[in-house]
Image (cartoon, rainbow, N blue to C red; front, side, top):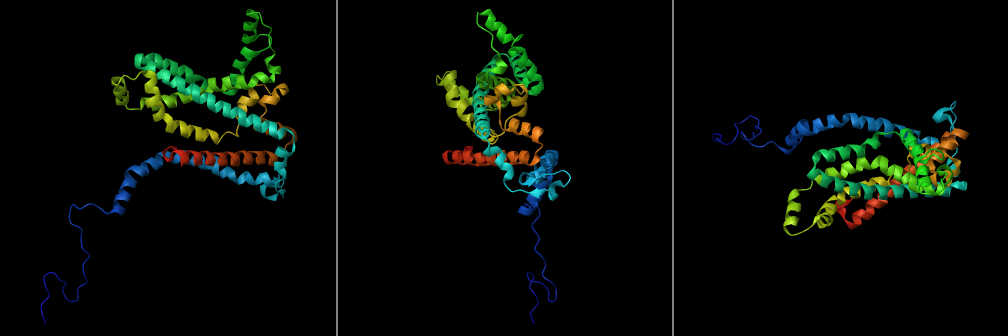
Length: 335
């Protein structure tokens, strides 16, 4: 019987598990766990409050979508109310107002998207030039543009009334000064697509200016230095460098805005026109129409049906818009 070799194991002893040499790199599982503990775990804890709010206010209320298919009665509750199928959706489509409020909602939101994009990009580019010459003045302009964003539409309504009041409004005083007749702004619906667009841009453009200005500041200045050495002017640098590098951010913002094209800002369309029935042909949108129907009829199921309709159409529009962007340039798509 031969003696066991030095390399082999002794008779009757179990084979030992090979040990990794000292100083060797950990396996992929250990690296993932270590990365999670060091970085991902901290980031998840930081995002936990936001995720909790998103779950409570965005996902839990989705259980109430069943109201869109019920004849809801408070005494019977959500699960005891009678099932009516698609009867609640007929309120939006059977009446003659359905086409008008849908066109107003989509048309005004499309106008807001284009106006905000053009004005915000223009102001961000101008503010970037001011920042290079006078940083303090740029901060003053930036704060002044952002200030209306924190105002509620109740406050904004008082500003609009101060300008458009038929008797004491600033606009009519200016018209009288130049020899023109005053206008009853709250009785002429044709002016209000422009008025609402101006109010919307004035209130929200400061937020988008900051977003685009931050993206412009993040662009590597070496691009502009090289273009300047090649003789490119400011307009050429904007066309060839700034706008192409901002195009991914612009695309994402447009895709997110398209998802809300069927949702109108209730404060803008209800408070600012002061719920004037003479302005309904241009200012009445799905949200205000459903609100008035809810307050007059008390039909909760109809209101839930309108909300579900807006959400589904917005979701489909985002998918279609993202598909079109992906076909042209996959790198700029949202997903």
